Length: 137
Image (cartoon, rainbow, N blue to C red; front, side, top):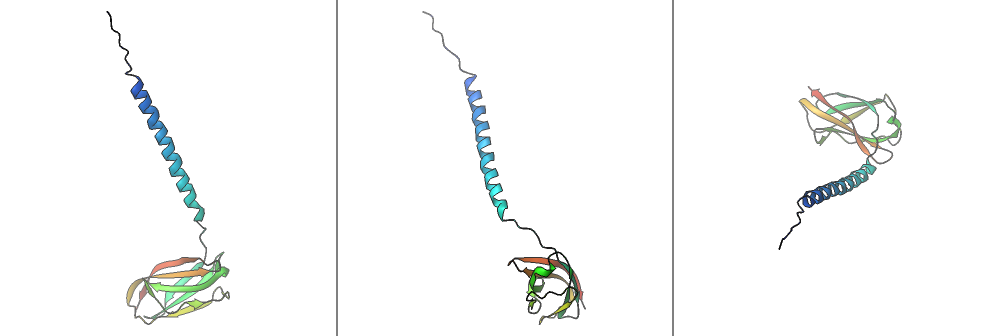
């Protein structure tokens, strides 16, 4: 009596390869769906020209020099690091390009500090429109 056995050595690697490719395709589809859904909330940045200069050790002069969105500004806030310099200038939709706005703070600043100007726009968004180092003497 002769006993014959069938060898299925080639079946397991082929099925494993097909399963790996299928899993990869499914993962790519899931990840791309998540990433594409996240990009819906990305807005456009505003363009505003700003000139900032220190007046003395407690005050900063901010001048809006122009830009496509300069007329959309409602408020300005100025910070030295994370410390606010003075009260925000409420522009109340009356932005005047070229008009200097003075921010007087109570904190004495000496030396070089990173100063940021944040603009609040008519659509309710806030955006940093200037960040730079100023030397207060």
